[in-house]
Image 1: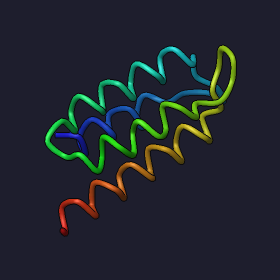
Image 2: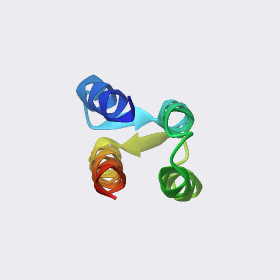
Image 3: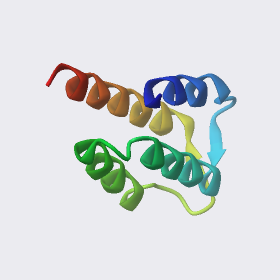
Length: 79
């Protein structure tokens, strides 16, 4: 489920920046989807405290975070 959501979020990225509140909402959606995986929730919470920018977030950062969370999902699946 969370892997599908990450892929959908990645596909929706357009341009160089995204609205910070929208990125935060997406991270909260990911957190909800990860409810059964405490290690993923911890990772998402860490990211939520470090979202850069006042009103916008560079999409390069957002893509890197999605990659990071996808790798974290893979680690949980292997464990």
